[in-house]
Length: 388
Ligand SMILES: Cc1ncc(COP(=O)(O)O)c(C=O)c1O
Image 1 (cartoon, rainbow, N blue to C red):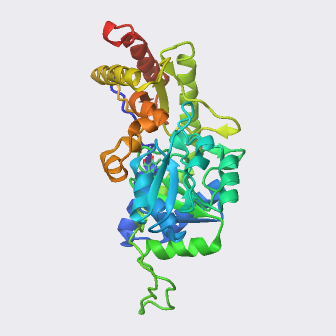
Image 2: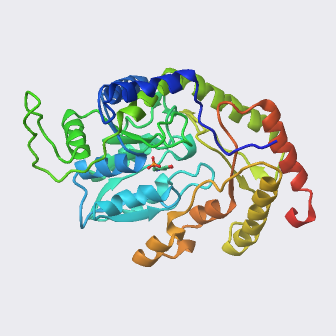
Image 3: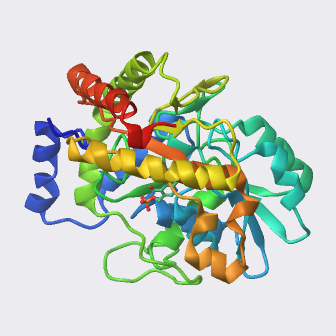
């Protein structure tokens, strides 16, 4: 048996619809992108949604529209995909890292205030792996210090906090349609907001700074701001449209698969299962466990890290693909060197980088495949090299 970490959910309709822009000849941003924006916006109950070329460019567009620039500081979790911090760098601003909660993998709200300075302009909560951040606390801090909130919801499609879809709490919410996400357009992203003016800015920025398109086809727009080419193609837009038709089915299947892992791992004390969170719907973009350790001092973490890596290698030899959850950005060379970071100052992010393990999860995974994953996991932990 060979089980990938993830697999997109494509069917005949997806294959058919991507032919339509090819046949019509209109392959850049067009009617399908518009339709995708519309269905996405309705699905998550956002007022405005603007499709862009990736989750990363969604983040950059949001921060640029909020005028984050040189001299500004933006607070974000130390444990997230590198793109969260890169988007801040693209604006010339400084990413200020905050440690995470060890159990949720999300930014620790209790730690945020100590990083706020007069230069702080925004917070980026990341709904990591599909588990919503407790947005009440983030919004309360943001209100008190007059900070903007950009939700990195790259992993958050299908995730709800207090019955509202993530991404609609802050000034902007950013989504990704990378193939490891529940709904995919190959590459792609969406930036959402409830503010009409911001929506206009997003549209301007993704299209080279083009403001009003004049009537008729012959004249070009006005270009009064520095924009980017972050447009989504209509081939991707078409795929987005047919993916959204089965979004609820995909999300339900993923949650059921996650619940089956929970059941299989119930009494297994070598791994900590993902927590579900209070008042949350966890969409399980990934099913990320942690090797359990009594003590999280770095020496112990590094020792256990070697076992985690060996475990992933042995699983791979048995046809089971796993991954470390994500990385601590505070461990990455570019950030360590530029900001003289000591990775040990973010102990929970450090431990999550070294000890997390994502199990295969996708809508089509079968119970037999999940049994195979867990049986192998349990068996491997009995091997002397992996005992701890
Ligand atoms: C938390 C987080 N933020 C941002 C991104 C960037 O999204 P994309 O790969 O679509 O650029 C990702 C991608 O996986 C992510 O996991």
